[in-house]
Length: 125
Image 1 (tube, one colour):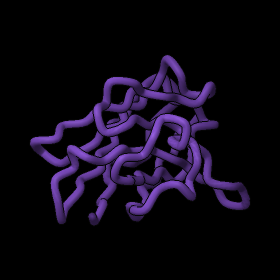
Image 2 (tube, rainbow, N blue to C red; image 1 turned 135 degrees about the horizontal axis):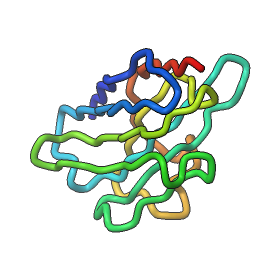
Image 3 (cartoon, rainbow, N blue to C red; image 1 turned 30 degrees about the horizontal axis):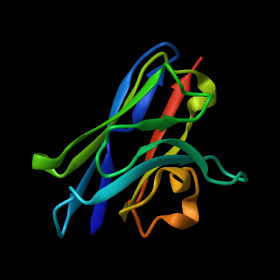
């Protein structure tokens, strides 16, 4: 599976963006997905994720209530809607995937097999 993330950009605090992660190579219905972010000098941080059913989404405390993860299997695309953005949300955002990932592993970067190239989100104050 190849993942292509897009949708990043420069936005003012309080604004919104929608990130997309398009998967190619095979159907995504059997895959769980996660979004992570990273700033220079820091470890990659879990943001949001769900298992292949998409029935249960998991969020980090820092984004809960502001970000929403969703998927469209027909379009092989996973989305991350970012609302009420804050300067602290500035980072490169990565999508990741793994077939059959379980709920307890969603927050762990090393549990994922496939990664997109990242898209930069910059939030100005």
